[in-house]
Each structure stands twice: as C-alpha cells, then as structure tokens.
Length: 225
Image 1: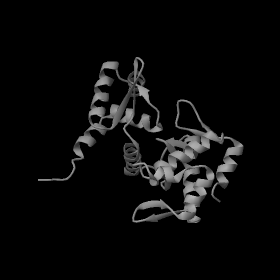
Image 2 (image 1 turned 45 degrees about the horizontal axis):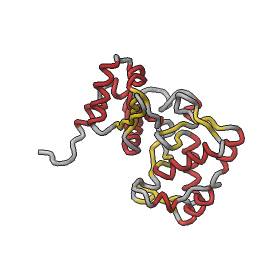
Image 3 (image 1 turned 90 degrees about the horizontal axis):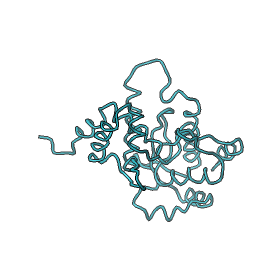
C-alpha cells in the first residue's frame, strides 16, 4: 500500500473546471471576493462558496477578512509554482499547431506570476543573470553568487534580509509562454517591486499584464548587463 503523500486529494480539487478557473484567476497575486470568483467561474454565490471552502480546506487558498468582506488568495508561492507547472504540462499534453501560453502579446511580453515577473522580459533577464554568473544553477536549485548578491544590493534589494526569511531567496519557475526559466522566490518578488517603485512599469488593472514605459523597458533591458 502506498505510504507517500497522496496527490489524489489535490488532483480532485484542481480537476473541477470551476475551481481550476478560480485558482488560475488568482495567479496574478491579487485577492478577490467570493462574488468576484463566482463571476469568474460562472457560478451562483452559494455554489462558489462551497468550492471555495473545499479549496481552503485543501490548503490551496487563504482568506483575509477586511470589514464586511472576505478576500481569497493563493495560500503561498508554493501553490503558485505548482499551478504554473500544471499550466505548462496542460499545454504540452495537447497536441496542436499553436504557440504555448497566452495569445495576448502583452501577456506574453511581461506579466505577473503570483508576485514575480514572467514572460519574455523575465526570461531574458534570467538569461543575463546566468550569462554573467550572477546566479548559479546547481542540482536543480539556484542561488546568487557573491557578485550577484553585490549587484542586487546595489540595485536596492537587501539580500541579507531576504536570507533571514523562511522563503527561498531564489527559485526557478518554468515560464508558461516561453518554456524557459524565469526568476522566482523572494528575490524575484523584490525585483518586481523595485520595477514598480522606480516607475519603469505598471500593472494593468484587472489583468496580469505588466506594461513597461519606453524608458523603463530600456532600463530593464540593460539591468545587470
């Protein structure tokens, strides 16, 4: 009899189309109300609440109360990484003559993946970091080199503080549209925050799209070059 962790329960939770729609909608890192998620899944409020309860009990969602409202979000970056991987696998398992990932050119170029940057821009950045030996891949893991830590600190990210947290500083994430790696983890989240704080880009309301200004796109394209 199998003694390892059971994936059947998680598979059953994600196997329902309505729950899958709710989960993928929350991949943008935002928190939504039950009524908003009901609209996404095209369900009545009562039916949506039942699905949300199952996702909460399964550890895939977390809920925050604010005033009279309850806001649902993904339980953490580990859940987001799992969903991104499943989205990649789902695309690969369907044989069709089309590009993988989103069709929207802006979504393909730059988008939020839970709390870090994904898309063409993010994949190009990861390639630069690797080429310059600012990050190193080892046995499937990834970490900053000494030079990499120095350059991220110079960019305004306190890497030493990130290392004190339980969350991994660096993680790889297989990009849904590019099928190559982009940077996730605490460092990826802080990098995206810096991009927003510097005014290089903004998130388009109600979407996962990250739209760079002409100046910001130039600056990001030269970052760590």
